[in-house]
Image 1: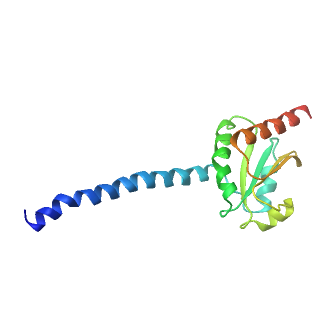
Image 2: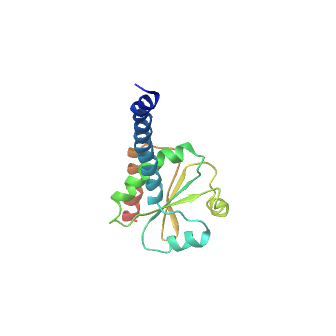
Image 3: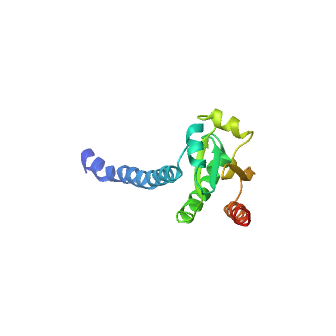
Length: 149
């Protein structure tokens, strides 16, 4: 076997490994990128005020790209949003590094921090990381308090 034949024979394996890696890791990365785009971001107080001026409760999640707990909470918020597409709960993210004035207005001191606002008033407040079950239970209890007035 010549050197050219040997190279051609084994050249398939690195290429296959590269394609597999791109398909596997590239697919994972793109799936996460799409998930983070599902929840709309608000960048300033005007956008926040517009979101609040509805008859629906609004959940604001304050986060930052560097916050590990925020990233861990992301899939739970996506699932919550998907399950609430027909309900009256609107969910938005606010990056504290990009919207420092909004974070200051809400008094955010640690991440993640979440507020549920209804008719211009804070109906619920939660700080810190949580499991999916804790998030869903908290949101359900806030929605129950809103319904009961």
